[in-house]
Length: 187
Image (cartoon, rainbow, N blue to C red):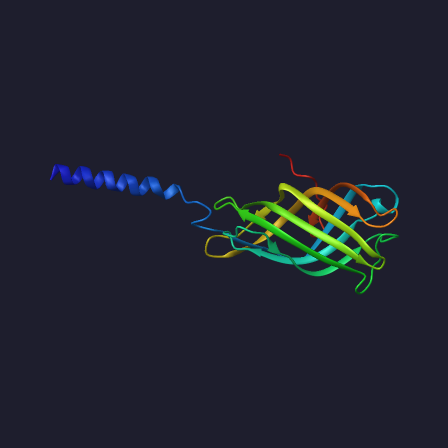
């Protein structure tokens, strides 16, 4: 009887100690984001320094994705379009991807985002924003059984512009979710 009690106690100890070791892959937290994001670009010269914009997109990460997910971009406009880009219907085409994960328990979101704008009028200018590794951050209210909503989203990274005369440059960017002013998160 003593041996049975010791074996039962040992088995219960193993079961209890395993409760705190869930991994993101076995207990994923789903997170979605939508709405407006504002991008501020720093650097560049002349027309290449005037590329701040607002965009609207939706993306949902299921917590187990191993490859970037395409952004569903529903709106885009430069604040100060100039020689390299113009605003208007079909003046440019936009595409992007995101790959992020949400820590179970804390709701901390980290990941990466890419965003590309290609001008149609004038043709051939390409603006590419690439976040740093874990340059996409925020918080989620999701769990393994519910899809959470990303809040306080911030993306930081580098941008480059290639194209015609005066439409080349590079620098850094800060992209913020919603209308709140945001700052670069501290490491």
